[in-house]
Image (cartoon, rainbow, N blue to C red; front, side, top):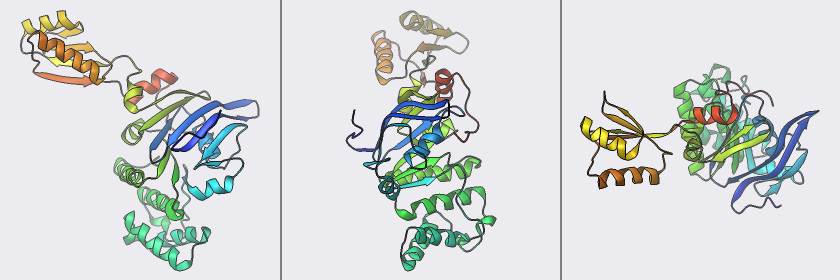
Length: 318
């Protein structure tokens, strides 16, 4: 089987990895289209970081066909490294250097001419709103500033694919949303983002596709809405004008009626087709609801249903 999926920035077939007798990844197949944000979720120790390390050439797989940026990870790791950037769980920022010096150092590591490194450092400091602190040591930066500098350093090599391994862990909600906007901007510029996160809200807000990893297997993959429809409990909540209309609607659609607030909860998978069917049946009966709310399970519900565990708190080193 080939991993050469058209338009794929990242593809893997049969990815396997074990540490001693412990099988961490057992035949993972995944494809990440170019220019998209792909998020990988999973319980602690599920292997999310291991996948990132393999895809970014930091760790060798035990089996599988893996291509990143069109290059075979095993046969041509240098070409893979030339096209990717990695922001890990722990910052790569040198706290003894200033923000500007950190960026210039990254330029040196990429063998850029020093004038180009300085120009690029200024550009990135402005883009990431760090100009005012450019010449302060990174040790004085807040957590959000440090993470922004870390992301800026990742961009020095102009990567086409960026791996973000829990990029907002430990940040306050405001700083987290600043990072979200940066990530959205990168994707809008055509950069492919491979994101692991412990925040389900983050995956829901950013990713076009999400995969759930559990016990070495991908147990589900799809858009956020597709994953939510895998979990029972979705419904359409209708508000009716009076008790008589409520009773008629309940006889027509089924569901659970609440006489106190004149509402009817009709089971639904949240799809547009299901909503249209309910509204058509009400219209045919001459009933016009006063209010309508579509409720679908959130990713917390999906995660719990698929893995049997609550939302992960902190990813292990594997």
